[in-house]
Amino acid sequence: MMNFVKTAFPGRPDDERMDCVVRAFSIAAELDYLDVHKILSDCGRKYRRKTAFEVSDKAAEKLKLKSIKIKETITLRKMLKQLEGVAACAIRVKGHMVPVIHGAEADFKAIGRGRQHVQKVFISEKYYFGEL
Image 1 (cartoon, rainbow, N blue to C red):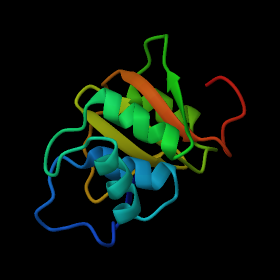
Image 2 (image 1 turned 45 degrees about the vertical axis):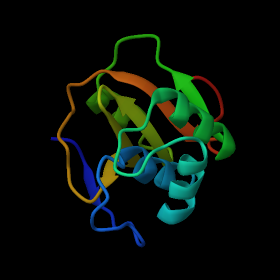
Image 3 (image 1 turned 60 degrees about the vertical axis):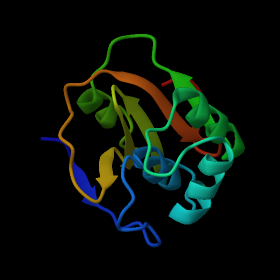
């Protein structure tokens, strides 16, 4: 079982769906949900639609999030253990972006994708000190 921190996202519309990138980036960049939502919209994200990789990568630059492509095969569960000392980041796995606070999944509900392989980690430049 992965660690989980129930997190609220003030300003998140009740009818919003497929906004995992918005939630994850708001945690990683330590910004309000609506501010990150606007940045992603400006980068090309459509309301209630999945966020394309190119859009999330472009938004990450604007949010000053370091994008780290994971070269070796590592599961989400193992990556979370490695990130226990990191205040906040976002982890991309297949079909989802996971918000993380101190090595725990931080969202409004647990997703339980511990066995999925990590594709990319987005971490604030102020917390990034080298390779993961």
